[in-house]
Image 1 (spheres, rainbow, N blue to C red):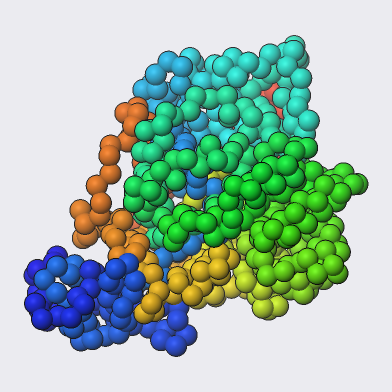
Image 2 (cartoon, one colour; image 1 turned 90 degrees about the vertical axis):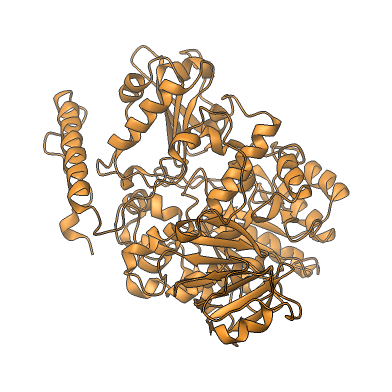
Length: 630
């Protein structure tokens, strides 16, 4: 790649300031309104030095320059997931069996059965998020009986969104659940007629019962945590991700659980830029935790690879409204604002920005009242970046108040996976504008796009981009009418330049222009040209971060950096990989039809079994009839 002349680009020993990498023969979408398109670009020292036509690159090609022929493919700025639990996800990635992208429950159970056979004694098989029952042809969860049959002796934990978990008999024993175990606050252990746990756990509506049960499973040792994180970052690079904003989360303690990414950053082994947040873990001592962290570090500490971005996504536990749309909206305590105001005041007085989890407008309105009180004192926003996450039911009035206070928004495709549950509870009218992305953009708010992976949505950003553009769930239910959707260029900007703005780096990344960081993705399909259903199937063939080729596939395979083997050797990732890429629509049609036929037949047998036992009406029909889909 570095010495062979390509399309007239001949290496020259006379080239002044030769580039490290030149990408040519491409359809470049720069995201830069001053020069929206290009054919080639050059990167030197991690920074873009030129964007133009192929002929403009001759002066940038030296003997050591890697010249990449894009073969006419689309190149876009590297994607930036504005809400990804990347640190926690990396620490656990190689331990998890991913059902992301699996089209049938039949296939998922086959994977689980195979994995159980190779999992050593004392370890668990865990399926932790990134999928929904609606993506399966069978449109249902696995049963406890199916998990017991697949893995009689190996603990199995299957998390379904933040709604429920299914455990087999061995997992109940490993977790210590008996008939005497009390239900935790906000959670339910489903019990049989004898009072013993059946294997179903329900968030009612708090997901803490799901978090705490998963926390009982074994964890990785130090070196394996590094290897796991590197493989997870490579998996994210597979989809063109070059940056992410880590939203912290439950059971992610600072500084302990941040040590792995800090060590990788110090060794130059990160392949994804991470801006992270700090999330108080213990109810009742949140303000003390924040005060301690303020004495230890400051926002923007770090560099372009790893940097602190502020506090959140929770500031106090009492102010968090859980997003389990299978349950009614949670009623928060009448006085949560007392501690919440103390936390926000402390942050504002010390120059800390924050992000805030808020699903429902009822919560957002109460939070805004606190912010307006502090603004009247001159403390808010005081130049600090702040934003609301999620905001599925935020009102127009609340958005006006956010804009007046200098806030921003970050939206995730949680309804890709929970849209059907949302419709059952709130109706298709409410789902058509959840969240109201167009209204946010019309008010001039910065709106970042994200996934909320790995325990809710999948980490594949193209599934989220498909949702923004098409308004469809992974089960193909249309939620948004055309007027409620955004165009492809706007959706891509939400995953590039908007994410950079949320970390104060808009002058350094998010667009492909000279002086910006050399972060890009060369795509398998042209995002701007493929039929809408195929957006979710796009991957990157070549991902570049700061001029480093961190992922390469297809014609470019072998150009990326070598990773150590997955460890432990029995890891599900070592055998199945991560996201299970399904064939694009129209490919392998006969095989897909056969798999769907088998799955539907199996689902009907399951319905008849339940009907015979009086667990469902004999004439039960699916809630959504595909004949009436839009």
